[in-house]
Image (tube, rainbow, N blue to C red; front, side, top):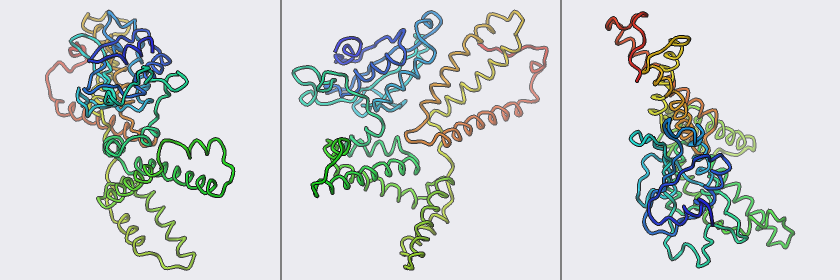
Length: 380
């Protein structure tokens, strides 16, 4: 493989690359070419990509480049994790960093690793399909289907934190099992199958592995119910499902299973938990607050000649807007309903506003600098 993807694939130690003038298409191509397959390395490396910087280099990068590149990495199955480090356990993760010392913005990637003996072949085409084309990116669904038991457990803990997320994945696995069983029945009865059915039936993803993951998720969902870890929305949805089953049983003139009745009572009696906070709530609050401060400053000096410090601060506003966008994107979880994510985001911003109002109230009797004629506080 040639180009930057080839250079990245050949890295045997931590290295740095520059994504100047990259757009979404180039980011997608790079992520597919460089990270769709595991690196044939024994020890973890950090592959750093420059995605922005201060005024001297800003013109080489679009404001949304960090978000574009991280989207591309997510598309091939990589996960955002600020705690990722140069260690084997960080394989398949990435993190964003604004290095204020260098005044550069980075996306650090920690690739999936495979032992050298099971990695690249002698032909060197480990990152290509049989037809010589770059491998297609792995979606979250594909990653869940293809990962091993240990990685699946990690995904359940880190990427599928809520009942709803786990339930969505469980439904996906169940649907695949139902389809596979239907195709298997056709095959056993020598019935004709479609090309799509053949592809699923002959997939290298074993049905036994899918069934085992289904069992794991069922257990984890039951644990969440017993532990009372459902939101009000999840409680309402689960109760509706259970009561629907009860109604069907009663309409059939049968006695309701005690297990079903016990679970309905258990769900009714639990006290719902709140929505989990955003992973990068602190960063979102910080940048949102700063953007608001700078917007007020910008309005106060409009049509006037501001000080050097004021104009410098106003010039930083796009960087805070970019950071807010990136951290917001990174806070959305796999298989999370958009409406739920927006609720979590709004709660985060309300919390930031309440904290700001509380701080102002607490300092309301402060010094004379708060008057209208004193001008803005230092912004640099």
